[in-house]
Amino acid sequence: MSHALGRLEDLPQSYRDELTALNLVPLWPSLRAVLPPGVPTRKTAPTHWPYQALRPLLMRAGELTPMEKAERRVLVLANPGHGLENMKASPAMYLGMQLLLPGEWAPSHRHTPNAVRMVVEGEGACTTVDGERCPMQRGDLILTPTGLWHEHEHTGTEPVVWLDVLDLPVIYYAETSYAIEGQRQEVKPGRGDQAYARGGVAPTPLFVRQNGSAGATNSHGGYPMLRYPWADAKAALQAMAEDQPALEAVQITYVNPETGADAQNNLGYYALMLRPGQTLRLPARSPSCVFHQIEGSVDVAVGNAGEHATTFTLAEADTCCAPGYTAVTLTNRNAHAPAYVFMADESPFHRKLGVYENRG
Ligand code: GTQ
Image (cartoon, rainbow, N blue to C red; front, side, top):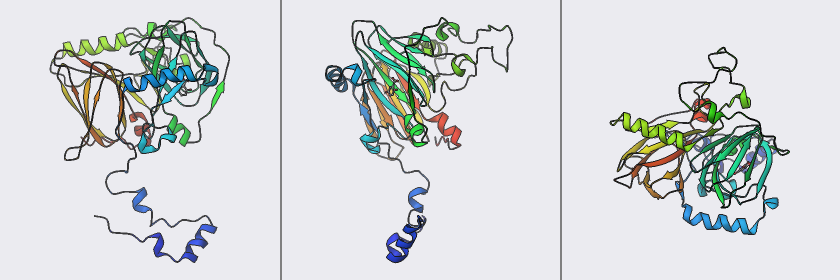
């Protein structure tokens, strides 16, 4: 147990005033707050955003606020532990539910934060990223990496909704967040989801492999694959589950197909299949985590052994988050059908910082 340190009140007011006048602060009254013993202080509260409750409010936004007045019509999934106005789900993750109505166009821009979209409902929308047209279907993951132009367009007949995940909080914290508005993009041929449609084989347009890659590493600024169709991700999970009946974690990571590294810089993206009735314990790791139910329904218990667990039931299209250093247990509520969960976490960021931990 660390012993108590001197408090600010223990110091004479005149001395404190002299420090303040010189922009100086004594460390010891705050030392335990910034370096707490053993486990970090976390503001991230386990939080659940049920889609059925959120959806009518998002549709109301569609009536209340035209596209010209919104640019991006988004309700932010804000963690109350961080203060709603700070628009964070966790220290490094921003989440938003975005609505695009038939005929609407969200104009082209580019910005320093990295974004992905996980399509929640509706057909007929497209995101164009760096000239590549990415159709949006339920469960598809579409990347808009840092600096790439992107715009959203909807030519279908029903509302389209997707979940945005951005590393905005950390890019903003670093005082590096900004955007540039642009013109409608010209769509060019060449789709990453076609070129990389099969795992283990990579397009080789230059005949030679350079730097151990197949020669397409520079496309889209080093992000050759921008759309990860759900049909392919789901097929990969199903094939793994069938091939390895004893495999506990039926999980895939969304990766850059040229480098094998995480698909984006700061946030990690994954999809998980829970077998019928399966309970899976995810170990306590340093990064915060977000869960979004693609198909089926799971019970989520957030808490380490011996602690009070916070529990949620995720119905289809629900989203929740869990703080870091905390185990999460997922249980598929259906005994007869698999459940599919999309996950986002801060692992790549933690690894870069050198603070990634798995505490089991
Ligand atoms: O679709 O480009 O939720 O720029 C927040 C900022 C979505 C977007 C968000 C954005 C976008």
